[in-house]
Length: 428
Ligand SMILES: Nc1ncnc2c1ncn2[C@@H]1O[C@H](COP(=O)(O)OP(=O)(O)OP(=O)(O)O)[C@@H](O)[C@H]1O
Ligand SMILES: [Mg+2]
Image (cartoon, rainbow, N blue to C red; front, top):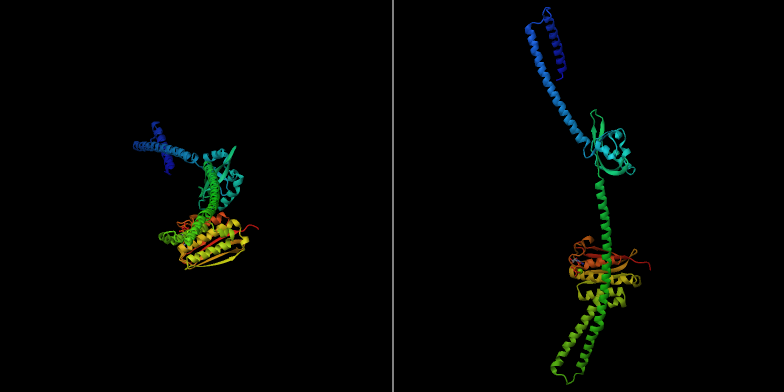
């Protein structure tokens, strides 16, 4: 294909020779070319004419292909849904497609030769600066999101991705693709706002639930107190009166009642004494009156003694290093209920032989600790709730937290269980 011009030239030269020879012949001068020679040349000329026509055809086909790929290039590069530009090493725009120009509201001519940084909003200049410094010579960079300035329009959010490249002359350039992500950002923003709203609502609801639960616990304690008083004052008194009357009847009974009725009286008296004791026990459990009469330290000691009496295999030791007067009234029932539940758990689950109860100041915190030497267990994290089916641990934690304290359990298997509840005491 490369020697085609030479061939054509040679052909032209020979054709000229033949033409001038035949012209001379026809003028009667001595013919230099024989007829055979002329025929051969004529044949050669025809061949070349055909060859030229074929080449012409081929050229037209190539021209059409070129036109088609130019259109394809225009469609693919200029009308792509993302903006493309080529940046020099120094960040100057060397080339930009139509989409890029329309994104910025300018013509392509107004972009070329200007630094890309001119189109970046002032808020994102630093980000862009660091991005360019980070750009590796060979590695494509991760996408960067920033705001771009648009002529006579508000700025918009764009995602910028770049790949290092070498142009046809071997110069290092950067191919940059830019897409408008404003709609995405708007969705992201509204999701963020929605999420923040939801979080606020959840926080408010949780706070409300907490307050409701705290109020419920107080109401429950008030109700227990009322029921305990009722039991003591009405049923307890009535039972006691019956016992008294029964006792008198028994003592005064001479010959009037029949032997059979008399024989039943001691059994009745025993049952009555049992019922009175039962009412007393229920009433104390509902609301230990010594909490109000003697204070929390006495009530805790009483609780410990009670557990040792009912569970002789369990040794309960205690250490109180705090004055009764230092403990806020409102906290007393909380302390009592926590210790009550902790003792019950020890008896129910731990197989412990010893329990240690302490109450004292650790730093500025009133600290309650109940430890046993039982088999321990795997406590859940607070988020999972402490409860492994029961309510005791949850109730201890909630009572502590509602009263402004913190609650922790250490209970690795085999090393016993330790519960710690602590509160910062208000200024006296
Ligand atoms: N001192 C302990 N030693 C060993 N395991 C314990 C101890 N305290 C609690 N546990 C374990 O934690 C679980 C949960 O205790 P929690 O007090 O919440 O419920 P419960 O005692 O089973 O039921 P409830 O207290 O509602 O009557 C218990 O079932 C037990 O497996
Ligand atoms: Mg329990």
